[in-house]
Image (tube, rainbow, N blue to C red; front, side, top):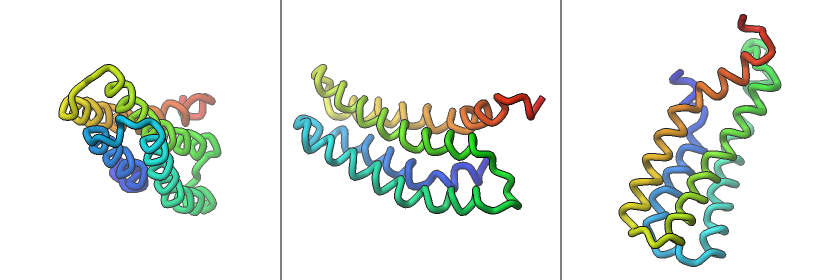
Length: 129
């Protein structure tokens, strides 16, 4: 479990940056917010994908293709979800502190469910039964 979180540090860091940035005035302007979210997610994927592919390429690790796809989807979807949440909350007139706390709570909830999502994807073919 610790290895899972250790390998996901770039997307987790991007998610935390977007959650904290959702309290700033930049989220009020759509274009800069989308650019910031895109840059954050892009940098996170650039830092995460090589390590994931190195781990998947090693026969010792026995990583399945669906595990790699699930990890990539998770690394892309969660920061995107948090950026979208910050934007939705600002369009509804939510104060900055509340936006930040809601985004941080959503970050904690989604990343704590991450290992279970990957495990569910891993066991979908019946290999684990």
